[in-house]
Image (cartoon, rainbow, N blue to C red; front, side):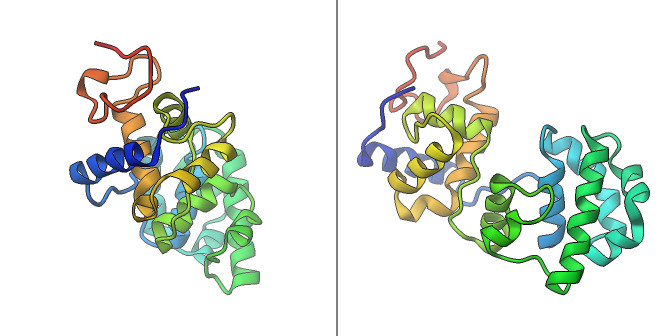
Length: 214
């Protein structure tokens, strides 16, 4: 685990990320808050590309909780069977759709606690929805952010909650909204797990990672 970087270094890192991509976007396709919840829930242990391929047809026919219930579990499975753990995910999507219809008038709630009460929605999923749909500075820590945060020293921590706390404590407020997207994309395409592309890294000179690749 790298040491925690100082404020000025972190500000320079995110200034560079901002200059390269001022408005980073998540890669999961969605048309409203409900389809975003479903897409993120389906993405656990799956790639965004695979989820998008499955949900294009699904969201064309079921883009609300009521329509998802009309489709039913078997109808949903027919759309998502290429995604890992699809049976369990289908059960959760149907359950959360029913809760949204019965308890929230078909609307997706915008509090973390309410979102996390839905089947198949954990803290990371809730934070993604809060950030991407409502623009809140919620930090969804995935494997890419965990790896990047600990390698670079931007937000080191021994678990995801510690990394999330480090993001909130150390990344300047004006970068908080897009922080997790910048880090996810950097981890996905540059700071790779096995062979990071250090020679193409925007922040190579600021990163604390000792085993930089040439």
